[in-house]
Image 1 (cartoon, rainbow, N blue to C red):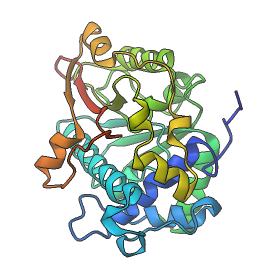
Image 2 (cartoon, rainbow, N blue to C red; image 1 turned 180 degrees about the vertical axis):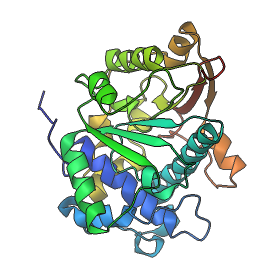
Image 3 (tube, rainbow, N blue to C red; image 1 turned 45 degrees about the vertical axis):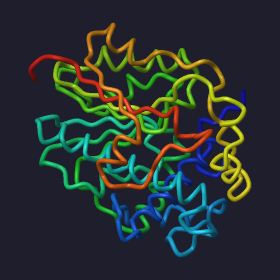
Length: 298
């Protein structure tokens, strides 16, 4: 397997970070926007691979009918809002440390109005974080929380660097794996959840995105996937891990966590988004898991 530990955003999974950033930029400029990320379009324009991608609704060829920037883009906007709300609820309930796995071009440390004293740990590969810092430094961006980036590949030991950055396993934590687990081999997904459990004090919470099972050939040929390949050269299916997915909800339950599983369509209805299931839907197997480790905060 190619060693991508120091590869930035111009290849492989790094390109998906740019794709999501472009979707957030477009979402920011929608009249019915669910999420506001003023930094997203700067990431897109700063990378050679994405310099000519759309960052505003008027630049999207085909408008809302475009499967990539319309349907999938709105999905990313919805996901951003839902997970923003999840982290803010945790923060306002007393959690003071947030860990972002595969943080990519996530700018939550900069754009969310966090309570005082909160620390955001961003874990990702060195090449991705270096690109991110270059763009944010150029904008003189100032974080709204104590931000501690950790340059490490999640296939390597990330627990020691997290501890060295000041993480406190005795304090409740909000963990987030957004758009990450579907790229990991099943043993890595199970290992990450077990590590989160070991490091979580009572009152900790976890949100993650998973896919159920393997998608059919009909789904794999759906417009979302084909348009991503044709328009921006991102082959999502080649990047997804091809092994049968583990039962992460069951695993969390075995570890004593309570977990709720929701579909994106549940939240689309709640937020008034016109995101409905379609035949051979690439979003049909996506699930968002929200879990908590029982017990009062220490």
